[in-house]
Length: 261
Image 1: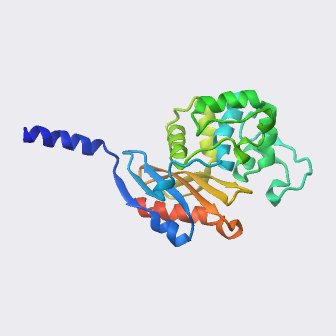
Image 2: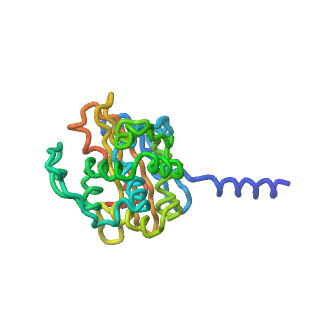
């Protein structure tokens, strides 16, 4: 009986995701309130900070450009990574927005106006259908008037844990999109690389909140492993805090995987 119970306990322990370490100290050192989750794909091992906030939903802001890009490609609204959009001369807050944008450039520069243009072309009904099929956060896109704002002002919201779940399906190529389109977006997500590693991701900044919310989501390919991550933080002083997003995530990835740039 004892041998049978011990064997059963071992099965349970092996099936339970390992927890590498807690990462609260990284949020504390940065002086921010927020949450971070890192998940190793091979065995589901998780490390987190601000765990009480992992399942709290927030407006995704520009992190929605990941699923939005997939939807625009799948629908044929955008033909591919080099599809170009001519700037209409409207001045925007960031200089890199004030020029023509290819699809890849608009993603990497987070050019909101370009994605708003493409999303209006697609239309609210089609966009709503695609979002509903994705099981992405609360799946809410509002009405026609929200067609180019629902990921910036709501009603769409998603949690850090749900972001990681979505990214896991993208990385595994199991989302309801053509594999070619998933490969295109995964390539567009590349932010940096070195010998034996690639960092893929997308930042987000929810403007005008009380406070503003900063996001960073993606994954690291390193050492034969894939490490999914999602961070969101409050930014009551965004001018000084917006750069903390990448720093916190990279410090966390170093702790759990040993990776450095």
